[in-house]
Image 1 (cartoon, rainbow, N blue to C red):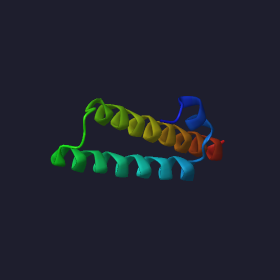
Image 2 (cartoon, helix red, strand yellow):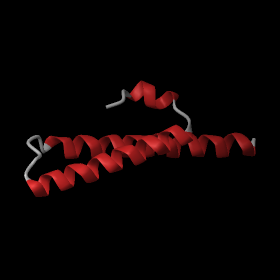
Image 3 (tube, rainbow, N blue to C red):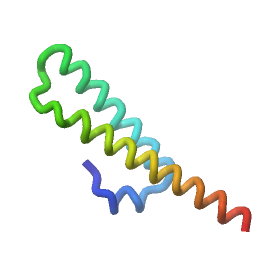
Length: 71
């Protein structure tokens, strides 16, 4: 997992690629759950929260860029 401070330093494209990577990881966890390979089910919540954190930061950055251009 990437620290919140490190996420804040990333640009929009890096955030997008990190979110995509986490979505793939979540998908693989779901497949692992179906096959009985997942022992730590708390990973689902952790990854979903991390994806939400990344998307929130990306949205804030996009809003900030929009406000700066209007000024």
